[in-house]
Length: 115
View 1: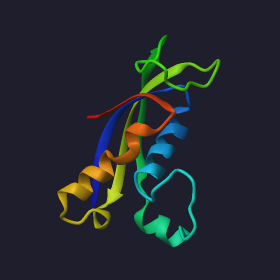
View 2 (view 1 turned 120 degrees about the vertical axis):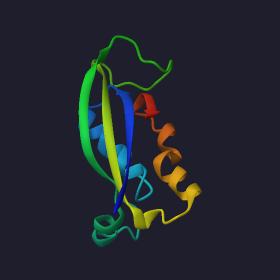
View 3 (view 1 turned 30 degrees about the horizontal axis):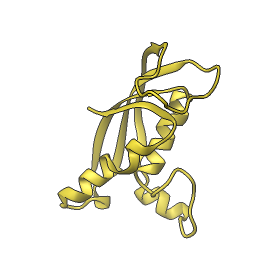
């Protein structure tokens, strides 16, 4: 059994890359591998991007001062992430940490909203 969350995102990164960064940050703890993070751990507990839809582009970032990739368009998309329920259990604070956590601090995003 899995839990899912849907997000509206805005980024100058490739949307697929941005979605994978989100999944990494919100499951195994970071978008970069850490010591002790094995392939088995990732296979059993990593978040998965299960849907991604580009919905358009904007001229200016929603968040002033956002770090953008120079010369790249600012795209908006809808991302759906999925996590194994075992990661959260029946704990509401774990659920909120999983679906929102550090996500809003990620530099690649000039807009991010939990839908």
